[in-house]
Length: 198
Image (cartoon, rainbow, N blue to C red):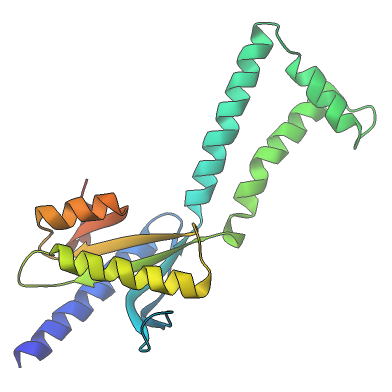
């Protein structure tokens, strides 16, 4: 009876967090209770929630792109380079006799390409949920991390995935320290209210 009640609570936390994740910008839940093959274990691994997010890589691109653009604009303002003149020369190889306005438009279009193609390169997210009577321990975190490592090794995934852990009661100090070291994003809450542990 107790085990059945725990299972119901665990499933409810999964449903609540999956609904919460779906409402966040850029997130899309692909499914719950998904099974994956690994290279070490013969039995399939069960992942509570699998989702994807297309904003992570876009953010990375725009940070790099805007940083480079800011440096080039600074050099342009100090008269070290002629940014727009150089860009015009490059673009003129594709569009002969391109104007200054055309050069600016080309730079804007280039900056929009990653956003327009955002759904073609999402980041896969593996989510573990624990509705325990105690706080999450390091062993729980370690098992989840190792399971996902075996899955991604089998699937050939390298850097295009993230780990997320959600708990009803939270985490002990060792679990949090272990999570930070392995870059696991930790959440706490229930129902419609969840917050990220910093």
